[in-house]
Length: 291
Image 1: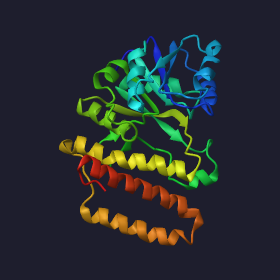
Image 2 (image 1 turned 90 degrees about the vertical axis):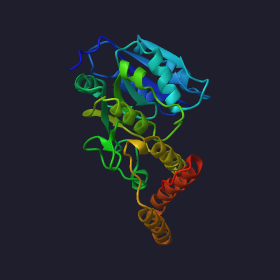
Image 3 (image 1 turned 90 degrees about the horizontal axis):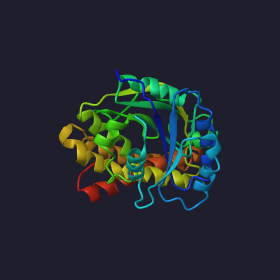
């Protein structure tokens, strides 16, 4: 068991979030946590009014710091810069386009007392319309996410990490987008750090607003998969057998033909195609077979 933190640092990494950041800041200002905490907004290259909106909330956050991480693009660089600038013993991470629940900070602070990292629960119900939810799986996590046949991992957009762990493990900045949560969590566990699930640390998550944006997101996810496999195959991370990979591609072709008759399934199919094309590109880039 850890001692309760004297100060908690909430870290929000942003890049061009003017459309949604106000809603997230309002939710953070409404937290029911009674301990001391600070807010750090990490600017990873905003070209819009995001930071101006953040500055307008200073009267609601006595401890507000804007951290400059514009020198290098990438979520993990922003996370490292935020962790370096934080003054708290516990670091809580959320995204600028989501909305935390009122008890989010309290739930993470309580769960983290018995672990090195806590991971919260994502809920897609409130911020997405029925069409957006039909484009991708929307099951609410009953427990920690787990990579098939390997280790569980925390959600980077809804987690708490003790500062000493964050600075010891660090986020690998070679992972610019996609698999960054898994990569950090895997290395932490291989270093004997413990992750727990905090079911009451709820974040309302926002899906991508268009089929094209969703496809780009899943292409990036897929592209990072072979990079993750290359980093952890020596530690037991598995890939599917070649016959399973081939079967998956055959199914994509078959489902693509069927989707011509099912407009409601076309975007769902597009998401799967983007993911697998990303894996193909990543396999070539990282010289491993991970399809």
